[in-house]
Length: 470
Image: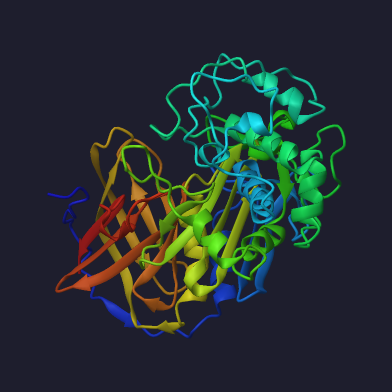
């Protein structure tokens, strides 16, 4: 039996009504959803969002504060840390060298980086990009110094002394250090410094004018302040952020969502040739034949409607970011925040995309207020049931959770004006939620799923479910 079994609760005895709603634009729906994510406990002070459809930016807007103390608002020019979305920037540069036949993805990396000490097994650029190299991710054995690294060559010293964790190709092991080595491969194949190559071949041609390295000693005036979350979920400014100069290619860039959707569009408008884009997106395989769900950097996924998505997310001190491409619909979404939340940023991007992917055709929705039973799962996967209330009035819809020994918690709902789909705003982000009336019961379920994935999330057990009698 699946998890998330809906449990019945006592009702208020109210009769359900159905309200007919006037259609809203996709832009207005996105504003409503994202506004619910900023400035609250466990959420960032500021978020920026951009959506590109068929080569045109159809939405770009900032929400909340780039600096909360001075009340500086987030704008479309506010820069955020890209974190690991930097990896697909690096992949875009790699693609240019492959296209020009200046780099072979399947040649041992020492051809391009002879100073990198040979390991027990040879490593290729393809394995580095797909996290199959066996190079460790961050660990206590790293030799990271709290200083500015002047070159990619210097950055190799952070991890080059470490042994491989596995034979390349046998295991998927996510590694930012692998991307530092990949940036050194790009330097060796191109014959120029990594950052200057990125600027010349990626940022300038794509019009990414607000993208570049995160240089802490020379902070851009457009750069957001960076925030962490304390034990109470309150955003607190990070006074001494990490210097990411040791990992430009894997997590050291700053950007804006408007720039990121331009990067995504490079895979749809021919800047990256279609056959090459197909190869880059294609999931790699382990030597056992098992697929990883990750191609040349890009992760494969699907939304709750089974649409194909290729994406990459990132998180680090003061940053959460995602770039999602819906290739079949020629739509791209980028979201950036100035804390490491929301955790489910991929699903959040998918929910932001949904109003642009589905024709706005609101159906009559239930209106009223009900006692409900809410079922969720804790970190250990244990089922937890709490009392709650569901309020649907067509304007400020919400779920109110009523734990026995804690204050009530309000989770806003946004009806997306198509079918019975809502966006539920949780500390994790925006989750796909369906609310339906079956006989004398109102019920709903929300789903979390993340990426990479090997199959669509449509059969995932709900993360949260509720039911109540009419």
